[in-house]
Image 1: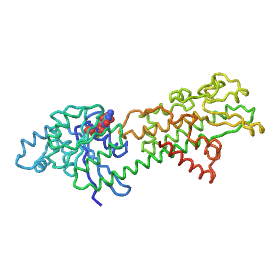
Image 2: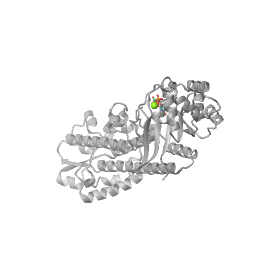
Image 3: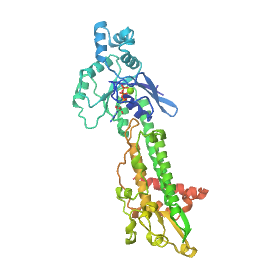
Image 4: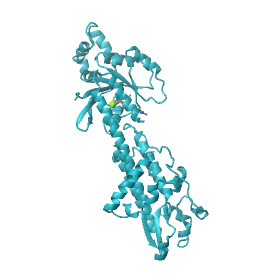
Length: 444
Ligand SMILES: Nc1nc2c(ncn2[C@@H]2O[C@H](COP(=O)(O)OP(=O)(O)OP(=O)(O)O)[C@@H](O)[C@H]2O)c(=O)[nH]1
Ligand SMILES: [Mg+2]
């Protein structure tokens, strides 16, 4: 196997170098990120590995602040007849490299010890002299340099690319560290590979990343499928003249809790951690809105109410035909009962004098919409992102009447909901099959 690559991430201060590492490492705790210069003070190493072997070592470096000063020093203290590396060594041995220019010295030392540099550019910035000076000093390390444009949204890169081309830098990448784009990352690695003598290691890395990405997506959709089946097959029975309100409330609570658990699992799969979610850093308000809130159904454009009788409770999923008799259905009831459907009594219910309660299909659809939305949000979120997670599409994945058959059938299979009981062996097996099928449909 080829030996691991070592890549120095360099650039002007506050351009997003540490952010780039966070996103490439899928690790939102790496280093320190702040909207201020000189946040990173030391070189820090991190590895991207392939299960067992390290493929790439990435080195975060302090921001360059005074490359012009270093260039002045080099011009007055070293001979233009020496090569760049000799001149840089003279600089690194000078007292100034321990003093005023110690940040710059750390960067240059690291690049001299690395295979190549990723030069992070804040694309919003004009092409200033200081950036040209940085590229001049870096070029003396005689290592390949690939510019990576950050903050690219809506930016015209023409002036930058022209300046870079004049310096022989024709290969570059755009990579927003906050709005993650999986294919963009693959392009970045592929572009790097074109600048190196052997691409074996990077091919291994991109193949690994692709496998991993597909697997994460599959795992996430399977979790969502299991969750939806749990909810759709959830069933409680009460006597005909029992007050259903306490039972309905406990059903709602169980569903709320299970949705939280699912959200937690999805964060875990994409390596966004619980501590960050609840630390206030991310307001998950939209995802944490009560799933039994009728307004939410409207936001997702989910039609509710099948007949005139439900008019008073549109959005609540409550069937008045069954409940109306046993309760004084005032306005209060809507808030309490939203989303739980007391089934029309079946014949056997009538004989036994019982009522069966289910979560209504509108709510199941809403939960599906929200889970898929969260999945999309996580798949397009860089690990450097610090802003709130927002709902994306706000669209229902299907018409309520055309719910995937696995979900529609789930109601007849209460044994397959872990909300009803611990799944017996056979039910577990059947449930796994249904979840596989459903997950496949969620992928479309
Ligand atoms: N909107 C947006 N903000 C970003 C992006 N990348 C970085 N930032 C922000 O830019 C600021 C600087 O990011 P850092 O990663 O600390 O930059 P750095 O280059 O490591 O900075 P120093 O270590 O000080 O040299 C932080 O506030 C980041 O949140 C991006 O792609 N989009
Ligand atoms: Mg930094």
